[in-house]
Image (cartoon, rainbow, N blue to C red; front, side, top):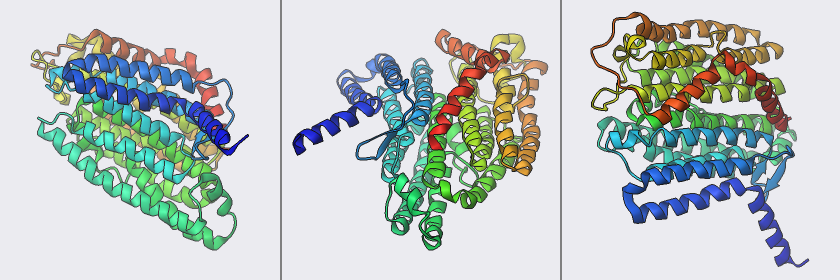
Amino acid sequence: MSAVEAAIETLAQSLSIGAPEVVLAAGSLVMLMIGAFRGDRSLAGLSWAAVILFGAAAVLVIDDSPARVLAWNSLYVADALSAYLKILILLGGAVSVLMAIPHLPRIGSARFEYPVLIVLAVLGMCIMVSANNLLALYIGLELMSLASYVLAAFHRDDRRSSEAGLKYFVLGALSSGVLLYGVSLVYGFVGSTDFTAIAAGLSAGTERNLGALFGLVFVLAGLAFKVSAVPFHMWTPDVYEGSPTPVAAFLASASKIASMGLLLRVAMDAFGGMAADWRQIVIFMSIASMLLGAVGAIGQSNIKRLLAYSSINNIGFVLIGLAAATAQGASAVLFYLALYLVMTLGAFLCVLALTDADGRPLESIDDVAGLARTRPWLATALAIFMLSLAGLPPLFGFMAKLAVFNAAVAANLWPLAVIGVLASVVAAYYYLRLVKVMFFDAPSDVPVTGGTRLNGAMMAAAAIFCSPIGYLLLGPLSAASRLAAKSLF
């Protein structure tokens, strides 16, 4: 076989292994061309096209063989972990597109670029979770970030949305610089950006490990911004409040899952031999995120800001599983992310349904007073999501927190588990407060009209998943998370 034939065969293999990303990239370009020629009237059609793209990519992701396969000169890895995370990301992207179809025209932002940007962001996320190299990591992260900056400011006629996009861009650019500086330090001390080579190089000598540790600190700081872990959380409440609700849902769900999955792969795959060093950093971020997320939400009057602090709080619990640095801990992280995706999307679907007679969004906690009397099904669904996020049994969200606590105890990190339980008790206050306002306060003067049938159907499906009925999926979901976690060990 000649060199040209070998190169062609290698390229064909890489294209086959990376088929989900190829489909998303090609589809986004076609969607962009259609939107450029047809204008904003193509928004609904492009939105459904994006959902079809996500479905096609999901079919390509699903593979009976969990074997680890490298492509693109070892920059890209396809394994059970990447497949698990991509399914969650694609689901989050599809729901974020569908929930925006009736919402964007109502707020005067019905522009065809929205589904295109979502597809590009999802493409970046899929590259992130399949990165086997720090450079591939950075490319995927920046592709996701650049699209997210525009999405945050998508409602350009609203001052809050423009402010949210600007804050997200400035702080995101700063975190990207910190991350890139950390990558350069790791490369300087280890001599490679490949995860496998880094893991092998770190076992060569203590001086090299010490230098790489400084780089790892900067890398963790950059990734902590993307998951909004304390002390890199400052952008989250303002961006969630100012962004259009579907965008906030996308940032809170798919973006968090991709970033957390990437953090898991970097910590366990590339720097697994330094777990004793980075565990201290992760434990600090976990405790700080749990406590600040629990306390910071108590005084909030805006539901989207409350959900922002809720996301910070939940990331703290996810980091407990990462701090364990074991296969059980990684499995707990992945299991938690799956439940967190559904709970978060369901909560934002409820927020999207809170509109007045003129279609204006109702985001204040006072606006949902007595909601159980006027919209009992909507109030019940929102209560299920809030109590599930709080981790109260017998709702399915309880199993997520139980999984990370068990992993911490098994790794002899029981003080961290105890702090997590105490933080859960504190956080339960503001979740229960919202439920109390909906079910026991006098009805608000502002009538709530509710959402569309499509959003209502997705909301109902999410509520059923988070209810005790969701325990029927406990076995398959646990098995899938354990299989994905084995890819790291």
